[in-house]
Length: 155
Image (cartoon, rainbow, N blue to C red):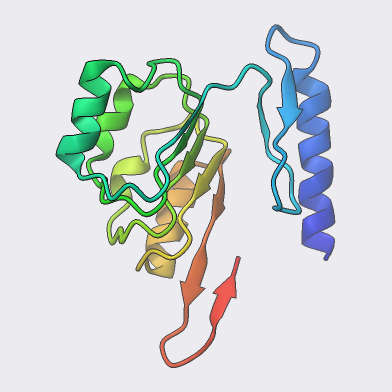
């Protein structure tokens, strides 16, 4: 509970600090109890559960279906694992890869603009998440770690 309150206060402080600059930030409205600051003029692309492969996703990028200035990208339940495809989105701050069967996320380490990354329901190890968190210290990584033979724990 103390951690949740501390994170909530940190989010409020971030909103206050960033509110005085050129880019206004607003709380993300989700069921998540801890708000994440995202640009007020967010461009959201929701590709939830389409089963997209790397090739199909690359085709969508090349065709312009996904705007280059996207800030929030939902790739939940897809098979996109070539993170180099995301390099063309310099404004991307929110990435949701839940349920994407990812077993290697080391390619996300260079995305230092991310402030929120959802990796729930992916077969990742605790050490993989720790390495990624070290590479992305300003990013809130949402995960679910499954303990072998036990119940999942949320962090």
